[in-house]
Length: 254
Image (cartoon, rainbow, N blue to C red; front, side):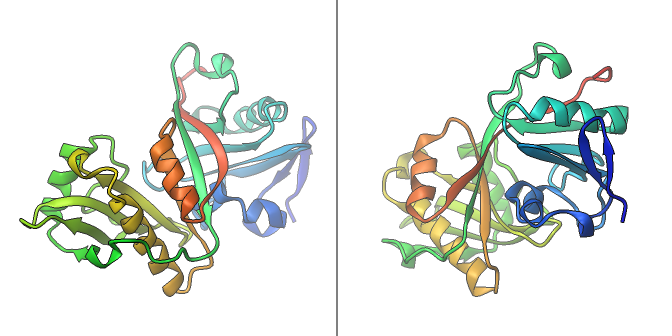
């Protein structure tokens, strides 16, 4: 065992040592590599863990989960050890980050998970697997330039989408697996002219049920905040918000 105490924070040196609630944390499931743990820290009210950022590829990213009171203690304990090798942080939304990043504004987002397959949605029979990745990429760039994964991202297992009568894409979404194998939906997008028709819900439901049909016990996703229309869709399909987060890269002299 490599469990130690430093500055009132309990430190864990391997995934095998982590308490059960931490291992089942949505942020850990989507944001860590099972072969890499730079460290994990726990204080009353929260915990933190540092690993590789799968989508961005950053070799050392720190995720902090818990109360606003516990987060500063965890940041100080973790960054005091990780030093300048830490590329960035994800922390609870609402935490004042001036001490660590100055006046820069972090990205705000919500992590969500679904533990039961949703029912079939109206128009879901129109959802089909997409194989023309060039068309998917062109659609993403037109509809949502801030898409989370590009068409040929290595973690994408399949694209699903809906086309209109002329064959043009009007909604798409990706089923991916994070480094831990966790099912994760990404780059869900609907064309402006097709919004309000339930196509985003149809694509999301089909992708989510694919996860459970593949043997997964949960499916996850994240969306930028604020995005109330998307949040309502996900809630209706059985997703729940597990983290209200903010993320940013770190300046050299954090």
